Image 1 (tube, rainbow, N blue to C red):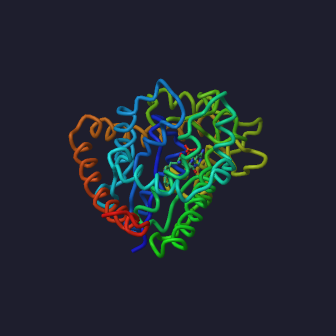
Image 2: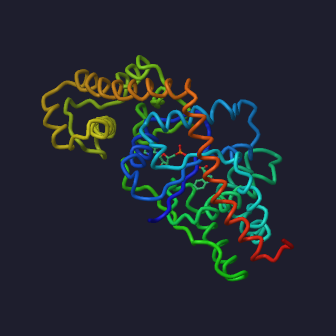
Image 3: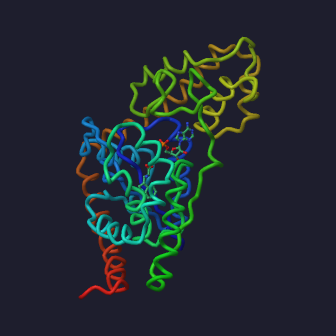
Amino acid sequence: MKKMLTGLQPTGIITLGNYIGSIKQMVENQGKYESYIFVADMHAITVNDDKRNLKENTRSLVALYLACGIDPKLNTIFVQSQNEYHANLGYFLECNSYFGELSRMHQFKEKSKKSESFTVGLLTYPVLMAADILLYDADIVPVGIDQKQHVELARDIAIRFNKRYGDTFVVPNPEIKSEGTKIADLLDPTIKMSKSNENQNGVIRLLDEPEVIRKKIMRATTDSEMLVKYDPENKPGISNLLNIYISITGKTMEEAEKEFDGCNYGTFKTKVADVVVEKISEIQKKYYEYLNSDELDKILADGREKSREIAKKKYELVKEKIGFYN
Ligand code: AMP
Ligand code: TRP
């Protein structure tokens, strides 16, 4: 069975876009791969942020994934900082990476420009990410487009190491999610719904109060026609709401268009809000159950054991290949 691994930063905010474009697919694909999902909390400290709340955000992220249907029996779920082999292998990989290639990474260039000084961790971030991936022999690494270059670097490092020291690592492939539906901002449907959008009134967060979610949908930008029809170019607002509707209900676009034929926008939005609020309320109910239970801590403790066992083997092999005294 192929191995799949992905990491998520504990930012504390998950949007409806993340759910429809990423988490839902992960849930639907469960069981197809040997799967590793981890909280990339060590990646979260590469930039300074006083409001980081690592502990709370880590538990919250895991609770939310579990609430969305990620099954701990089908996925090994763990926290990066609880597994020392990530940083340890990261160092060995740093000694097989070049300053030039790291300083050319898009994300590094963009983030290092934002302040006068930046940490070395921001520069070596993609090498730690390579260690995350290579420790588990991951074949498939699903990421957003912004992380593609980092997965390609992990490939380069794996190939380079294998050449230098003999076969050690599986060469991973980035899997860029393009088949998933893109969800747009509710107020400006020409941009994607994102936790970093300036006006969060166009962004539905999975932990928003249900009434807030309803209000955001009722205020979504539409157009001056009175026609519920899928036409992303000319009717981006309506098309986005239709996308949200069919993603949550599992209906086809034709079915949805038929259902709302002759409907005014107020009625249409109410119906979209109903299904979104129902779905998110379900998720939130489970979220709070997980958040307040020991089960979550038990799942992470199991994940810690399992991931350390696998990572240790690879780490020892790497040491042997490099030729350390043992
Ligand atoms: P991000 O929150 O940007 O790091 O994205 C995490 C994952 O969620 C990536 O796989 C994205 O492709 C997906 N994602 C984020 N925002 C959206 C959106 N508005 N529509 C669809 N997918 C999204
Ligand atoms: N850097 C990724 C992000 O910011 C998170 C991440 C860390 C990751 N390690 C990973 C993703 C390994 C995939 C595989 O989204």
